[in-house]
Length: 323
Image (cartoon, rainbow, N blue to C red):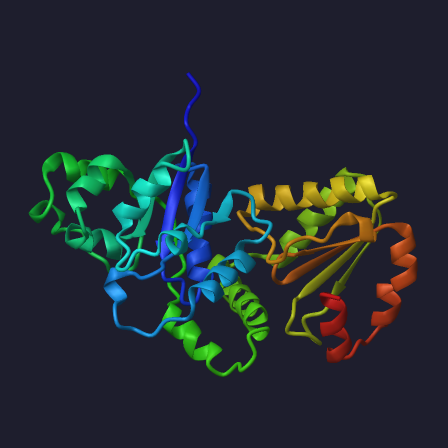
């Protein structure tokens, strides 16, 4: 009998979505406990009644921007379609069960698990669905036996995920966003915050990552591999790598290979959605390492190394690092 795909229901206000949310979703996928993370922006969360929120459409769009191109992550508008007010998790899960053959799991944090007994139809929720829980610093679960039976406690605790997750809050992000008047600035702001969190929390050795990407490129027979250390003149990244693929098919294979190998070895995903190879240029944004993969024609046309020169200005560095 074919095993059912497990979809983790990741609900929340996402006002706005931030690197902490992305870290949770990535960690859930990396744990192997689910096959897909379905982000479900809340229409009218019961615990935030009366609070001013960003419109659903904008929160939904921001989630889609954050997870665009990320394998195993999708965003659902089911709460908006149902328009429940208040919107209770179990009600949405029951409706979602009618739309998908997947086995549904609820993805929450330790802080929500500690209060889960207060949720609408809480015991029925735990009986019907698997509950996956990610760790939160300073959150105690010692009181669970006061609210749940021994069997329920066992089920809840068996769904706890190992690993470290981001702790940055939506409140902090909203304060930063308040300084940005244009809606178009939000995507750039989110990416910048994600980059900062990746650098601090993941503690990646980017020089080692650069060497790893060079090795990957060599394994796929990339040509004319060159590297530039740009951290001294740009806050965008520390390193840049440029390599040539002989054709568009090789360009697609090379970019997919490097992206996959970095994800498997470093548990790191690109911060951007890689471009279509038909342009002859694919950019992989790994935070403090930017990888440019180009066909011979594109590399000759744009001449990145020539534009950089020996002492590039900060303005040039920022423009060239991400086109």
